[in-house]
Image (cartoon, rainbow, N blue to C red; front, side, top):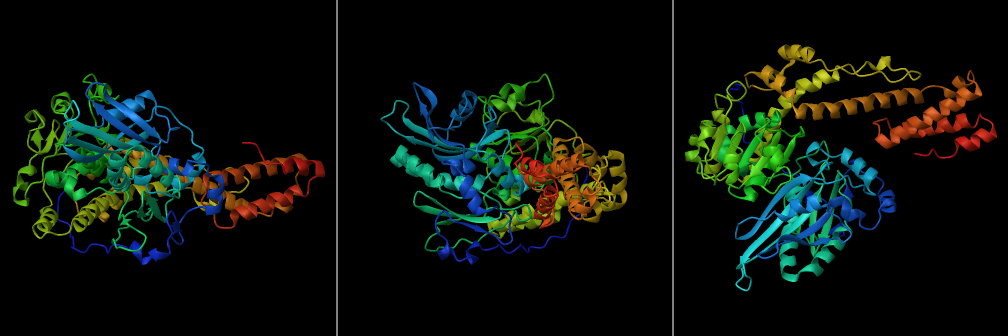
Length: 600
């Protein structure tokens, strides 16, 4: 796609919001603050349903210590809490997550969950997850592993080096938060060993659950971390850090990586990379270290926010990964996945992949013009090749051909002027956000037109169905209501939409929107039912028909509570009152039966 044309961009960056506007001195450790109005739940109810280790499980699956021994090889030495379990396959994924870097290194990886493990927190986590933005939703079939790896010289060991990793296994994509947590936990563990891990686990099990819309203060090993849990409508709240009597660390974000640092080596290709991620193309990131590999993959996945990236991605992928053969085979087309690698072996093994990014060290702004050309993949021989974007396919029809020099020079000017990293990140994140919003608004507008009219909803008929998504009809809307209304970029938008509609990202987005709209129809149907005079209605019913109506109303109530349908305040109490008043009109023996709670 040829997108071109400068877009006005001011240097104004939104003022960060200050968490410390709250009176921090009034916050006790492990306390939660609900942002008004803010979603959340009844905190007393939450306290009542949580069992021992449930709070820990809401944050982490387990903590692993991985040792690297010359004779025994790599092995998980200990898992905390001791009752936590990992399958053999999951253990094998964790033990190879070391690197050859001297000193301390932090990175993350992602792997498939071996089996579906049920948690006593199941329904509670589903409820809290519903209020989270797409990029912060809990993983369903994968785990994240957050690693703190230490390698230092030690002459007392046969290998000559001390090598050990502390790994946090979680379903939460809170990259910044867990890396900050490891910076506190790992040095203490390497010095004091296992007792300090037990203490850390006990601290975490006293934390409030990570519910969107709350500001939490989380004590861990004598340090207090203060974080804001983002909601769907509030995903980029940044904060100033300020010392106070209780809070040791205030995190401005729980999940965002340093976008500008990650994309700097391939900065002139960022729009092309956005399109590749949007379309779910197979993409390899070759980097010199696990830290740069994992950060770059996470930056790529986040660049289409608020859309959720629905394909697989592996921030740090090794030859020991259980999907190695599946992802490197030449007998079929590369899957829709983003891989981050460091092993030179992959430069040859993945040479048949259509798109490869080579990430090197940070360059000076004056040298960045060398990035402008997309190189042919045959020129990529090893990981020592020059940084840039390599491709085996013709990309001119889908990606940018004339660069938006005004924007690029504006950002690069910030490097020369030593503009703060937070400001550079905010500019780049806004660029991606506006690009994604311009692309998704026509889709949102068309999908909204698939909703039936409210006047077609009858309380005595089933809720009407959504009209089907017809690609040709959507394409016809682009001429007058396409992205040109909100973006100055010009190019083959039609071609980009045509590819997107076949991608996993569209499938995931549309499934979610269809579910939300179906729930809205159910909610409108329920509200219409509550407005009816049911007492007058049942006067024309037989006893059997009245009992049937009660059972259907109870099913409706159960569905509304289970799915948290977006009904108006007061609707559910009104429905309960209707049910009770109808039951009162029946004989006593039937009243006793209908008052019994329904079995799931």
